[in-house]
Amino acid sequence: MAKKGPRKKVPKELAIINADNCTGCESCLEVCPVDCIEMKKIDRGVIKGTQQWCEIDLERCVGCEVCVHIPGKKSNPYELLVCPWDAIEMVPTENAAVVMAQVGGPPEYIEEHWDRLVGTAQHLAELRAAN
Image (cartoon, rainbow, N blue to C red; front, side, top):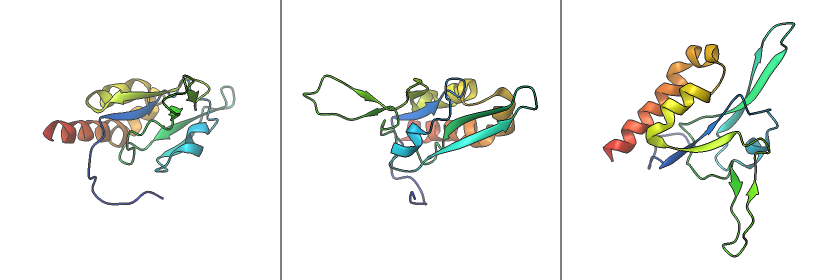
């Protein structure tokens, strides 16, 4: 479990998961060293079924990129990607709020959780700009 308390440093980049590309396979969830990824589900009704995707808690994300690719040796030209669906993007912290608003989940979900998702990203961008 990640430590609670104020951040020592705001990362240059934050991981954002494109909910439309994410299948909820949990590959990223398994490798995250700070345990900041969790599964989200929305019941879309009888006809459409359930939509699920992984979501990153930006307050806890340290920008390590492990959810995107496993670091290899500098001599190894091959990169081991974590997400088989290319759903995770490392975004400069300054742009995270805009990207989260666009791809962080279904529009009604983003609207309902705006403060936690987009507001948190904007707060981190402001902290980064102040340092």
